[in-house]
Length: 438
Image (tube, rainbow, N blue to C red; front, top):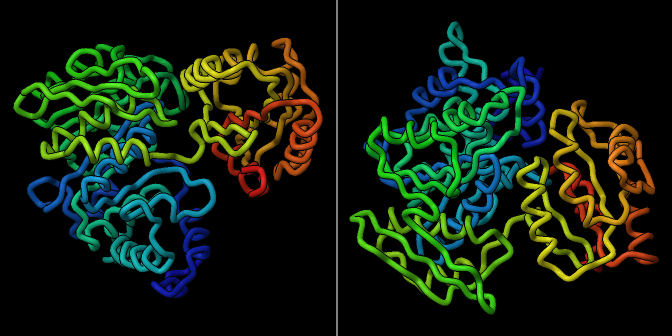
């Protein structure tokens, strides 16, 4: 482990990140006591009474990153200053902490890390261990506080109730979807999962629910806290798109009806866009139709229906996300499609692949550089047992052969390559994908 004496604001970000990776005994360690104690030592404003800004927390099995990105884009179009904290990153840690849509500098992050390290080690006899994610979360909050932004947008990493982000008492909580994922931490019971994700709700604070179908535990949790509930298809609605335009109607904080028409579609799900509009209008009733339209048109998110020429990349890695991806693909013109996939062994792989099998003609399988990733050979065997055609299983965790094979086959025999299964799969391809393909 890197010693305390070697670490400071001038230490490189790479060295700091190696330190964070070795600092705590568990990669994921759910619970708020340790991270809250360090936040208090740092005098971070965790309650709305302590803050001069507004804070939104986004949770959900799928869709929380897209909903946050849409909220961020519309808030920026409105002229607000915005700090956004998301995870994981594709290439650089800096992607996790953005101000006004731009990742902050290495120097800004290492300065925050140095303050967190000093706080957790002072007093030394009561030093506090932090996980990688907890350290990152505190850094984001420190940086946003120092920058004095109007709005904090915070994405929950895992679950909700015991996630480090939940040390912040948000002015509004968004819960997008509830489905099974991370079963080793959250189990398989949807009522329990819903209860955990609803743990970001706060007494008398509004909650925006981005799905019409959620476990009863979510509404029960909100009602027990007397939270005003705004739910898709109940309190707010969206129309189906016609000629790439759609409309939204919902309520403001005073329960007065509002509506916006002729809204542009985007690459991100319209249910998430409708949810983002409802959330932002509750905190900023002055939000204009112009800002909404500009924000929707500009919104984008790496790895969500991301088109790069004849490559289509989507981070779908659980059954719900894969089913949504399949539905989107079915809306597109029929293509001869090659799949490039790598997945973690702890996912429900079979249920995640099955919706896509009728839409993919053949598969290239890659290994990934993590111990919990499923080896390519095993993933290929599973695909074949489902009746799929596999042309290659690349054992190299860098995926060089998988990428070059997919590129060659695309040039020779296919219309499109679909890349899916993990953030790491997409990052592997994006590193190698030539700019000429875009």
